[in-house]
Length: 214
Picture 1 (cartoon, rainbow, N blue to C red):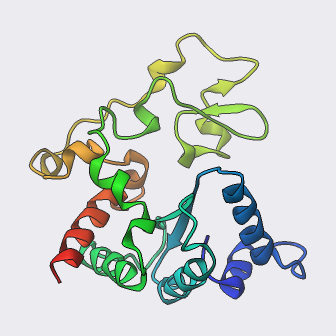
Picture 2 (cartoon, rainbow, N blue to C red):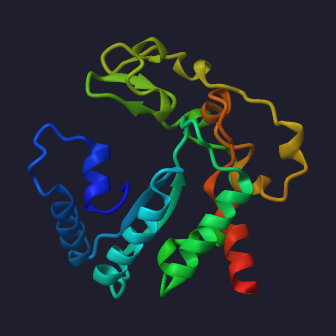
């Protein structure tokens, strides 16, 4: 989700702009949760919608605070011009914790206690793939839609497909980072696009610890 109703509609730019899509999405989330299905809501954040994301948390909190099946997690959008610094990201996540009546709603438990990663992400995982609507297969969700980056198709897939996996070397700054077990050097696609490679756990864990010490 990208913000409250107005911001959401602006960013999604649906062809039929008259539909109350935001309201429908909240209803669908509620129906899933009522059927005992866990829903993890991704909150997309950049420098332009930060304030509205805080407003969104109030909206979600008012409707779903008592439902244990619904939690949220922040994601800082990549590929934007005005990027947040690491310090700004931590400060904003702290603000999210302050807004939440129950910090556990921001899926912090699995971020703190999940097992260390053996691989940074699906791009390096020989058992993970993304498939687009045309059946083209990719080794990374960031590449979906760029057919020149496809490994093949569902009909024509080489047995040597996993040779196309990237073996990214561990960077020096990662080798000495206390968050290394949580990300294993992070997202190679983001790094190649000039964005921070670090996984969201880096910012969530630091922000949560600082928040608890306030």
